[in-house]
Image 1 (spheres, helix red, strand yellow):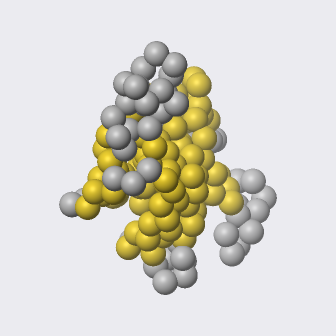
Image 2 (cartoon, one colour):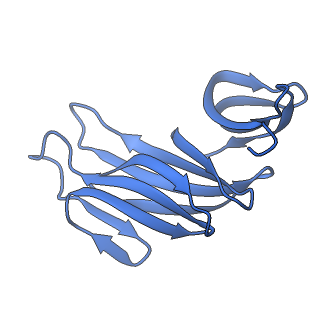
Length: 154
């Protein structure tokens, strides 16, 4: 942050206490000034695992997350989400989902008001039971397995 502060994300097992703000268990995003004082914080509902965060030049907070499961006995079903928020909370979310696993890799805010997200479109290590990957973003479908670098207009 230009003023020396930071924006952080995390997942609280029981509760998160930010002085005058307290949240129950789950994901959160918070900002602290250069002295460590809480500027703002909000809980992030409906997102299993926050994986990355970036701040745009306009101050929007970009949150990369994954929802789903990966295990030895269950077919992979992991979807990636990019949420756009202000200090008041999330106001828009872009889904990158579909058959197979869409695995979040990284996120960056660009100076032109867009964001870049890197996502791997894959199947599990056990392809016998896993469908071919088919990442769906809006009305576009990407069926090639591999890593995609996508530009999102904020």
